[in-house]
Length: 149
Image 1 (cartoon, rainbow, N blue to C red):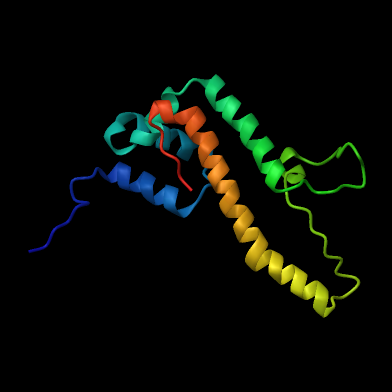
Image 2: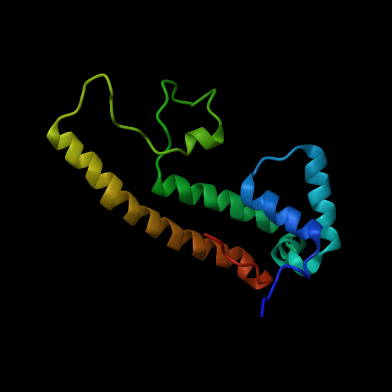
């Protein structure tokens, strides 16, 4: 006995899921088509419809606080200008790379870097996700919008 759980799902919905799984980049026509399909099929896009119902002020507040939280865990890139002019907000939030490739690396530096990559950063990432979930719940739990890692 063969069970095909996908046979009752509309092809348009399957197409949106495939696009979502394959690429975050779509053109404006494809974007509009995706939005139309999402609008027409709320049963298959429950989280999207919940998100759309959340007031913009709540989303803006979360975004502001999440950027601050990210900066707390991952210091911004250092620039040759104090004001960081010319750097986007995304670039300013990236972790600082302290390795100077022109000097080579010694065993102590290598050990320090490997410790950061395999011990410190995973622990920091875990703590960051825990704090981000708290922040997420603070803003979105009342709307029953799920936290996705």
